[in-house]
Length: 212
Ligand code: BEZ
Image (cartoon, rainbow, N blue to C red; front, side):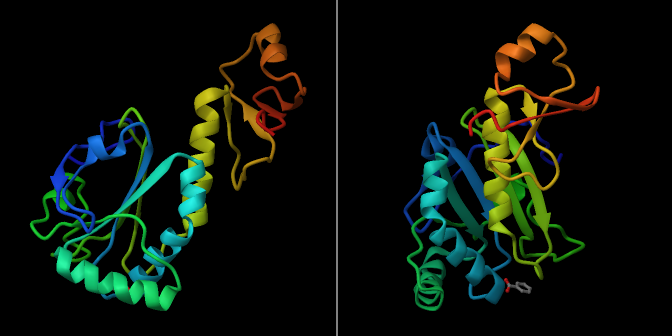
C-alpha cells in the first residue's frame, strides 16, 4: 500500500555516499527531506542536487537534514558528485542513498511502472522529528523541483505545529496567516493572537505571522 500523510516513515538501512545509513537513527531529532532521482549523470538531477547543496544553511536553520536517492551504486554517485560540484559550483554536503537493490524505492513507492519500469520518479517526502510523513510530492522526471517551495512548506509545517493557524495559498514566512476555524473561544483567540486579527468572513480570520 502506498504511503500517506501521517504514516510513519518506513525505516531502513541502506548504503550511501556517507556510508550505511539507518534512516530513523540518522534523522535523530531533525526534520528530514528524502527525495529520489531517476538516475545518476542526468541533467535535471544535477541541478537539483546542486541547489540542495547550496541551501545547506537554509535547511540547517530549520533543523532539516536532506537525503537524496537514486538506484545507482555508490561509486557511480561519487563520480557524479564530482561533476555536480564542478558544474554547479558547490560541494554536495548531504548523503545520496545508493539504492541499487531498490529496497528504499520499493518501501517508498518511488517507482511508478507506468511512467518508467525501472527508474525512480522525482518523489519527495518531508518527515518530522516524530518520523511522521508530513508532505509527499511526486514530480515527473522531466520537471525539476522548486526547492524554495520545499522550504516554504517546512516553514508552514513548523509554524502550524506551534500555533493554531494555517497558511494561505502562496504564503511565505512573515505573511499573514489564518486562524484555524476550530478556534472559536474569543478569550483564547485574544490570548493567542495579541497582535489582533481581521474577520474577512466568520471562517476567514487573518492575523499577522505570530513569530514575526
Ligand atoms: C534528468 O534528471 O535530467 C532527467 C531524467 C530523466 C528524464 C529526463 C531528464
